[in-house]
Image 1 (cartoon, rainbow, N blue to C red):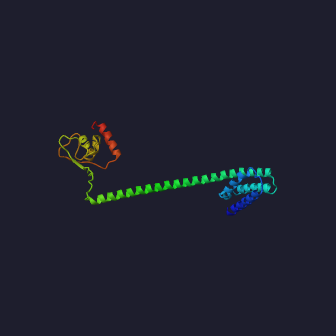
Image 2: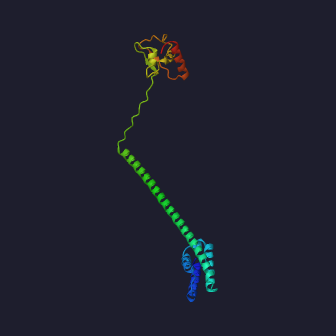
Image 3: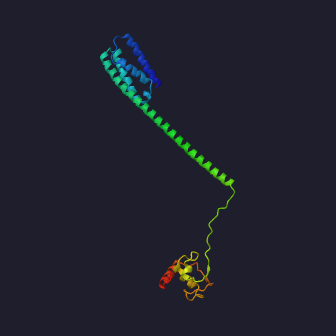
Length: 230
């Protein structure tokens, strides 16, 4: 870019000397020179080297016609064409600069958003850590209190008959089966001392089976329905 800028400077400097020595200046030359000078100071030679080289060639051709051949009209046509190329090139350079600025702004915004999100996550993690520390400290400061657990009810394996009770009534008790139709299970387990399920003696200690299957329970319910006792 330094060499290209120097070339442009030399071209314009020599053109200025020759212009000062000549007479009338072509109309489009005075409008084109500022564009050529300005583009030489920008990134145009690096961003668009072919277009910039084409612009210089067109401008130099106009300079040759103007200073060497003294063809003002022909030179003005090249100056006008060079001006059009310069305007288009300047527009493209501006577009690239704007795109770069927009991309840079987008990256800055993404970085800012990412930084804020990381800060938020760190803040939440710190709050959680402090809450956990406070909970541990509060639990440590308080005297240890054993949490009371609900006692697991122990189901009796036997039952003492009370006055007036029947096997369905005993079977329906919550600590027995909580189901009056399961009385045949008790009856079968105590056949040695119960001959008639409808007649029990106060003080009798009867066995309460616990390990019976679902099939046994279904069979007991059918037997209960069949015998009309629930």
